[in-house]
Image (cartoon, rainbow, N blue to C red; front, top):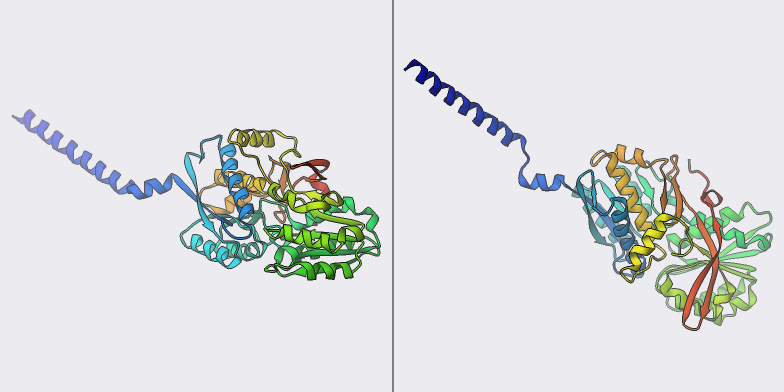
Length: 400
């Protein structure tokens, strides 16, 4: 009888212990929603799905997706956590870009990437510092993003690198009249400042400008202003869907017949016919084209996209590199932004363009640049890369 009572007590005691353990486990285990979110890392992407810069936004987004695939070995996961992009269309409008970013920050996002708009990037950088999030600017080229603060990085090139690359064409322009023809937006204004900064190192150099309202549709009056300045060299900084009308206006006003050298950045493939009859008279600097780089990452990207009948374009690398940076940051930490930024500072890696380095002191993205000629054969166009410039050649001065 005593032995039977002891067994009953032991069974009851064991049951109590088991129930207590189960209760403790229930308290420690997150609910279903938390369990799901803990395995999904959401990254905010602000880009132009619509508006004048929609083609750039599409290239950037494509690059993001391919870059995530490459950087995670096809899994889309970092340390077992799925990385998910939350897309916000800024409509090629800086105010919408800022509003969208603020909404993401309010939802608790730790990483935000993107925007093609230089004006938007300049406003998102201080938001990153104020809210202590990681911000990786996209194709926005404004120099002001570099060195903005400890929380702001960039995945694309900056205006200074464009201009510095172009100086390889400009040796005969020393002491002559240089005019920047650009849109009156942050991107265009930044190009004017960069040309003056770079050419300021050239003795006797004069730099003037003609800035065109972004909403302009008739470019003839501005082409006439340019002609009246009697430039020896014209540096054209242009973005968006109005390029065809702009180049036609310059041609109609005889710019290509009266100016020694016209230099511009090669835009995406769809715009190549827009250069028209003046194509052979333009010297091109190039941020990226699929045939220029010679490295395994670019080979992978070109091959993968070709299987789907696609090809990387001008800003595909900016998205690709952004994903490489995001994965690098998340491997350091999924929640501690200071660890994320520390992992990125000074990081050297191979992107589609080649060897790139995030300069630790100001987060400048040091990268190769290219020069070349655009050729037309009937209805077919091809770009021949003539010069590959190493990152050190086009590196911007370090920001304090």
